[in-house]
Length: 327
Ligand SMILES: Cc1cc2nc3c(=O)[nH]c(=O)nc-3n(C[C@H](O)[C@H](O)[C@H](O)COP(=O)(O)O)c2cc1C
Image (cartoon, rainbow, N blue to C red; front, side, top):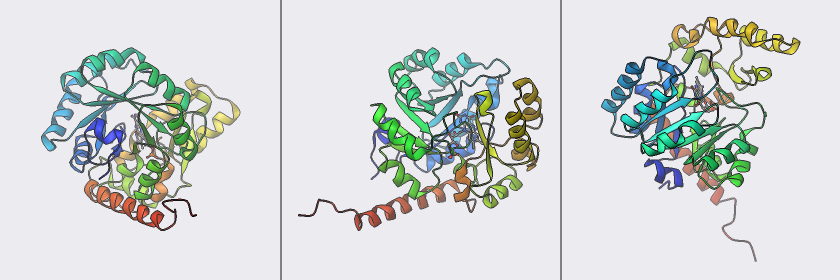
């Protein structure tokens, strides 16, 4: 029904992907996405150097689904050394079919992953990085726009422009991310030339996603105006829930600050939103698509309605866009 280069390459029923989400994207979510016919990624960095915990989480997901389980390998600059080689080894040994890389060029790990039979989808926030990913031999690229939760890059170009620019720039399959949350978004991503849609914020607001009820309640109440784009001056921009902390960070950036000054602030209460539902003093990744989130469905319900809505869009367009030019 939905046949694209991505559904074929990743062996999934629907061109719907759940991006890796640090701390919140655990076995239950990734397995639920696989059971619903998509592909989701758990994040190596969530478990840091505790490699046994990562393996255990992968196996837990395997117990919950026969579908594909993806692993995100964050290559973002980090304060502590990240066990990248070990995550690659785990991906290979655990027969992970697809790794999502992000944050920096995956050059150093492409060969090892491919030799181990793992496909690579590299996530980028600009077409020039997509070209690099293609040159390095990545199997697919995911492009995320300025509105996305997590790391939107520094260019401040929205998905509406970035997706078709990227589709024109590379020949490998393109996955569209950033600002997508429903069937209209799925249809739009495919209309822009993408081979699948990737969502993060929308999946965070599901039953199976890890997170405090008060945090999920915030996702329902927040509008598209309730995010903040911070840390651009550090070259490591993040889109997160707007709160007194993000106001302060933006103020500090406007007057000129240093990473040394910012780090203690932004790391002091990491994960407080997700763990405790505490919103005021934490940097909690969240995209503008939160304005399209009005409930906390199961992943299966989310897939069903997304697919249904995409088909309605198609029907609507059938009545608007002629199939052939008028005489
Ligand atoms: C809470 C949260 C945590 C995230 N953590 C990561 C991560 O660790 N690695 C990564 O590559 N992307 C991460 N992302 C980005 C998502 O994978 C995805 O690219 C993004 O959410 C898509 O945009 P959307 O939020 O508009 O759907 C995160 C996003 C959120 C909301």
